[in-house]
Image 1 (cartoon, one colour):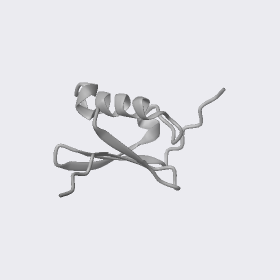
Image 2: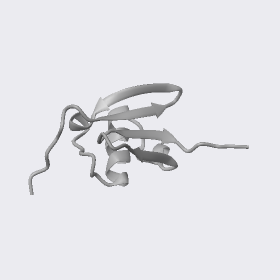
Image 3: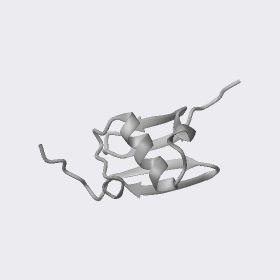
Image 4: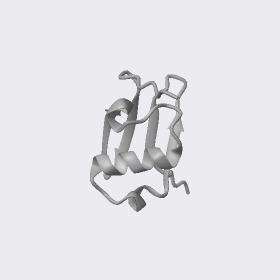
Amino acid sequence: MTLQLNRKTVAHVRHDGRSFDVPLADLGLSDVSADHEIKLAVARHLEIPEGRLRDYMIDRHESGNLTVRPAAVFG
């Protein structure tokens, strides 16, 4: 099976008070990648241990884009 990487889809990452977009292709990902694959690729990109993203959420959008963010705390 060949993985199709679309240069237009991005991971919008929110980490350590910053937000930035990384093309999924640059991470070696697609919009159907598993959550653990996404967290591992983002951790490598940020040069941090994968465990720091353990509690992060991954929101999948109809466009194929992803948002990788800390879990929201309410109350």
